[in-house]
Image 1 (cartoon, helix red, strand yellow):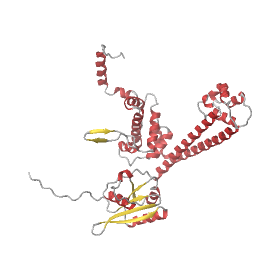
Image 2 (cartoon, rainbow, N blue to C red; image 1 turned 90 degrees about the horizontal axis):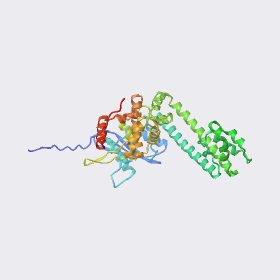
Image 3 (cartoon, rainbow, N blue to C red; image 1 turned 30 degrees about the vertical axis):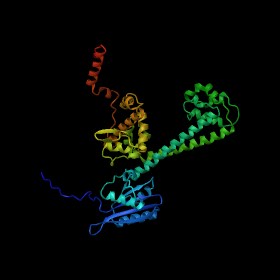
Image 4 (cartoon, rainbow, N blue to C red; image 1 turned 180 degrees about the vertical axis):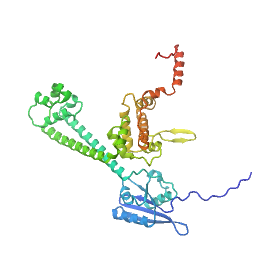
Length: 421
C-alpha cells in the first residue's frame, strides 16, 4: 500500500503576535520584544533598563507603545516585584520558574535569556507562577512577618532559659511554662535587688495551681545569680515583651484586614488541627477564592504536598515529592501534626495506618495532603467540614477483611463468629 504524506512545516503555532521577555536582575533589566512586521516576518528589538522606578516606567511606556499585551519575566529572589508593581494593571505578567526555562547550553547572555523567554512565550510554552492579588499579597506579608516574630520570640525565650540555667535557677523544673504568670513574677523578683529572698516573697508571686508548690519554687530560685545575670535577664525580658507586643499588633492588623472572611475562617477552624491563627495564615497564602486553581490536585501540587510523578517504560520509578519551599507547606505540616492528636478523628486513624508502612514523615505529609484537599473544597465550593471518624477506614472493604480474618482463624484452629449485639 502506498502512503502519501504532506510535508507539514508548522511545528509550533504562534499564540502571541506581540510579546516581550524580561530577564530581571537587581540593578538592570534585559528586555526582548518580538513582533511581526508588515510582511508578517518576525522582528526583535532589544532594550536595557535600570532597576529604578523612573526606568521601570519608561519600560512600561515602551511596552504600551508596541501594544504588547503580555510579558514573561524570570528573576532571582524578589527582584521581580518592583517591576510587577509598575506593570500590574497595564500588561499581563507571567512570572516563570528558572528551572522551567533553562536556556540551551552554549552562548549565554542576559539578552539571549530575554530572547529565549520571549520566544517560548510567543508559542505558548511558558507556565506562569501563582501571583495572588495585591490584597492577598498584603495579607501574606503580615502573616509571614508574624511567623518571623514568633520565631524570634521563641529564640529569645530559649536564651532566657539558658541564662537561668547558667545561674542555677530551676524555675521551669517546677512550673511547666517558663513564661507563665507565676514564672514571670519570679523572674521579676530576681531582678529587684541583691537582698536575700525569703519563702514568703516567693509565695506572694504564686498564682493558680502553683500556690501549692511554694517550697519547691523557693528551692528553684535559690541559685548563684549575679549582677551580670540580672542585667542580661532584664534585657532579655524586655526583648520578649517587645516581641509579644509586636505580635499582638500584627494579629490585630491581620484580623482587621480579614474581617470580611470571618465565615470562611470559622469553617476552616472546624478542620482538625486548624486554629484561627493557622486559618489566617492559609487564607493569606492561597487567597479567599482559589480562582487560579481549577482542581484540588492543582493546589496540592503547587503547595508541594502531593507525591511526585515519575514513570518510564511502564514502571513507576519514584514518588518522591519535589522540593518546593512553600510557606503553605510548612503551615500544613504543623496543622497535620496538630490534627492527628485529635481523638477519634479520621486524620489520626489514617496517620497511624500509614506510619507503619511509610514512616512518620511521609505519613504526616500524606495527612497534610488530605487536609489541603478539604481546605480546597471549603474555600472553593463553600463546603462545611465533616469528619469521617476513626471507624471509616475500619469499615472500608468490610467483607474482604472478615473473609481474611476467617481464613486466618481457621488456620489456627478457630472459627470466627460474630459477637452478640
